[in-house]
Length: 114
Length: 112
Image (cartoon, rainbow over all chains, first blue to last red):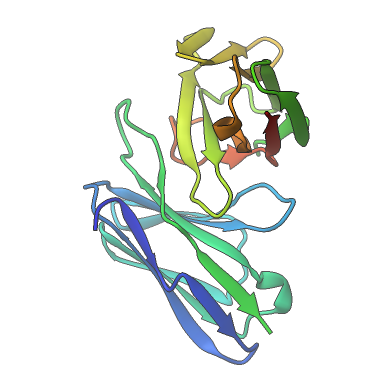
């Protein structure tokens, strides 16, 4: 599959569960991002990885833990989430230099926390 | 940090009319301003972007203008079509796209 893929597409979890979201990009990019999209709110940048190093953590609670094992894969580990964490979680990737900095988004994971 | 405000939150236009969406930003060091379109149930996709060394950019029916002094930029869609119906997000970044701060989005409805 081409572009940016995310799994699972839908996830329902209890507040005590531990789960992980996966993102994979097939575009040769060297930066990856996690965003949270809630209803009636702007897209919120959560984490930025550039060249596999975390360069941004926008005051995200520690119950969200990102992992970037290589430039093509990005994970978001979830544990003891709250109902207000229910949202669409979008992954994106881009180049980090030059003019080609368009961010390409994945289809998202719709997360529901019960 | 950067703050981006977007107006209006919803916009309804008749097919064939023009639509204008406006955004303001707070960080004068921001230098990259993309616009994303998100159709219902789909991922956001870049439709046009502008850099701070340019005042206007056009791509067929879509144009973006940037006023650095006033710190605002606008999306213009001419001859709107039903397939233009979507949520449009503006964004700003001071590092050519690495850390985008998004506006809240505009729901555009084109009535046929």
